[in-house]
Image (tube, rainbow, N blue to C red):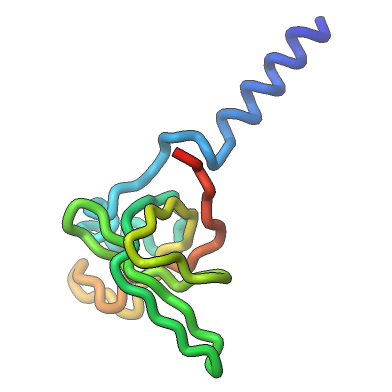
Length: 117
C-alpha cells in the first residue's frame, strides 16, 4: 500500500514538473496566434540573440529565438548571455493586437529553468 502511494505521488510530481523535456510552446505558434496566448503562462526555449539592460530604470530584457521566430523577454532577474540556450516559463503579453496582428508581443519571465541538457 505504501509503495503504491509513493509511486502515485512520484508520478504526480513528475507530471507537473517544469523541468521535464516536453510541454514547450513553439515561438512560431505564439507569433502566429498572439491573442490565443495573451495572459497565459507558457514554457518556451530558444537561443538568446540580444540583451539590453538599463540599470537606473531597473529594466532588463533579451530576445529569444527559435527556428527563425523571435520574442522579446522581460527578465525577472539576471539577463542570460548572448548565444545562451534558455528554457523559461513566462506570461505572454501584447501591447496592442489589431486583426490578430500583435504590436509589442513579449513574455514576462516568471521562472528560468536550468534544465542541464
